[in-house]
Length: 164
Ligand SMILES: C[S@@+](CC[C@H](N)C(=O)[O-])C[C@H]1O[C@@H](n2cnc3c(N)ncnc32)[C@H](O)[C@@H]1O
View 1 (cartoon, protein in one colour):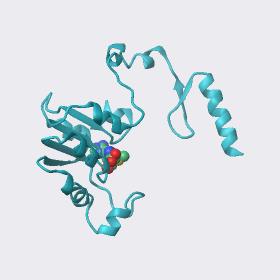
View 2 (view 1 turned 180 degrees about the vertical axis):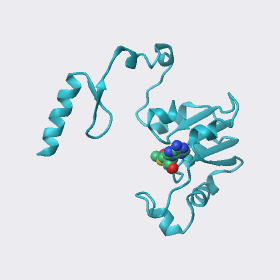
View 3 (view 1 turned 60 degrees about the horizontal axis):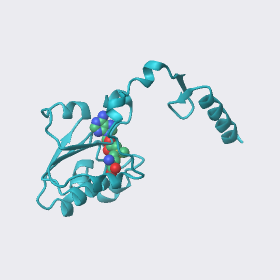
């Protein structure tokens, strides 16, 4: 019942031009300047795929790849397998603990987040050099010069303020 009411309210809000930024909080009405945050020329060569794994099929192999927000490694393994980079930079807070919502693997392994992550990649590295950078994404990325990476996959804190 509550869900139905919520859905009706959400539909109504969308029709009035509101966006929902959290489960139940309504954001301000979208204005012209909000829309103009994204410049049209940035979208001219955008390719839309139905699943992130298809992006990997479209990228050239080798090179230097970074993943920002690696978690416990499942997509790092996908990237390593598909792109065979020479250098793979893994950026994360690496502060996960066994008590976290997603901490079951740590509880079972008894490893730290960083140690567990490294262990997950051992069989996928082949010739790739793995560099793990522990800390806030924007601070760690700032340590690299412009054009250092061939590709960067961003999947850390999803708030706009964290990735702008
Ligand atoms: C959704 S998980 C990443 C999952 C991974 N990309 C995958 O698909 O397998 C998000 C990760 O981002 C990390 N993270 C969150 N905020 C961060 C920040 N400000 N800087 C660096 N890493 C961050 C978390 O520690 C967490 O491991």
